[in-house]
Image 1: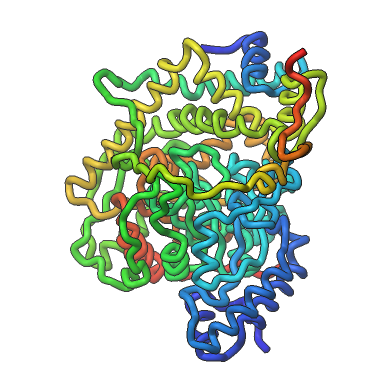
Image 2: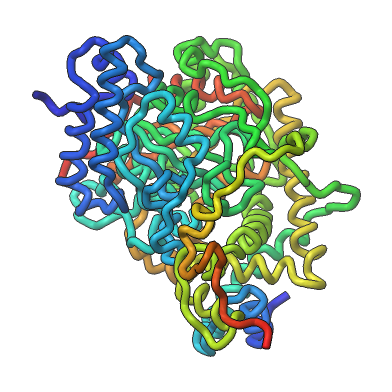
Length: 95
Length: 493
């Protein structure tokens, strides 16, 4: 499978990365080189093979359903580029 | 006073306890070395002078009181991927500009609890994506090693290039690193240092910036096998804050060093003889096998038939997980923000400006292979292949093999801005051809220096062990170290 320029732009939008036409062209070649490389997986007979979900088979750990920490609003917004009154500020999303 | 930076962790530990010098003197010696040489290497992206001096002073008080921890007063470098409270933590990415965590990673917290001293944060490939440390927002790291008679600048490998270079150049006593496809073992091999990626689940991933969560593991890079064992003992723990941390007690790895390997079975996998591999790497591999035979181990030819599919499967699984993990860098919660006409435009501009070319490439691949209609063809198939890769190893171990010996890398260190690597991302990816199988199967692997090539550059061998059997890796790696000796670069800096 190989990707065309429109697919590159669609994927970039899904990935939320702005790309110029020039970048999209370069990426198309790079992505096709990588997709060409992974193509060899089609040689492998995977009939009846379970997909790996964890390398070490263990039961999922569960923690007690209790509050262990909290009241850290100041810490949480401390690294935000823009915040106000413990809220993250974003461009207007509703009219 | 003689140069205190020449001592290994094990040596410094004894001398600190014996009062031959203080932790403050040792730390000062490293800070002086860093201030003099870091401009040449670009190994540290942040040097924490004051912090280091305070920690060393506290260590001196503990040493006097006889309350020294296992790493009391030992100065370490920390890869920029580890969250360190109030200190530069950016995974060497522009997108995390000015990020200062309000928490400490479990692994670094373990090291500080044992008395270690932080010298600063080490350079790395951006988000640990790279094999040459050239994708760092902070620029490449220089390998302390140079080819004989040449002044050409070489890469230290990656992604833990700053860790490997600083250990090789004695700009720290040891360093933390991480390994998703070979990022501890390949730079260790390129710099004549020892690096171990422990079993998945051995070290907590809590507080380490995530790249590919099912593959990422923390581990040390050190000057010799004993130092790597000392560091891993402190780094490893069982942690409720990482659901994949495995509840197995941490053994005394140092105790395994020096034990005889007589009667052990060392597997030699035929699939690790790849096209285009330099003859001297093949010769070194054979020599390594002979060292084991001489030490009384039995060599067993084994087959790991799915080896060649590990790298292509990795380049589906790792980017897929990365595309999900890196979705959080959105210009809202931390780091860089580029304003846009609306929220989507803000996201897209922030990520376009904040991520470097390699990170964008992998996020794009990951997004593509997980997108509607392609999931089964790519991701699901890759995870099935991963099951087969793991099964290959399980069969070898079930047949009685104790450890598997392979080359660590398909070449020695290459030049900075290598034309062929820059032109073809897949060529760069092939650096990890021998190491990536281990991540895909979740096994422990150690790279240990075994010799120099014709140009005088270090080459490493890799040993792969059973899950949670790091002890056998330290035991067997020590056999290679004893036979090969240790390798240090000629000082030009």
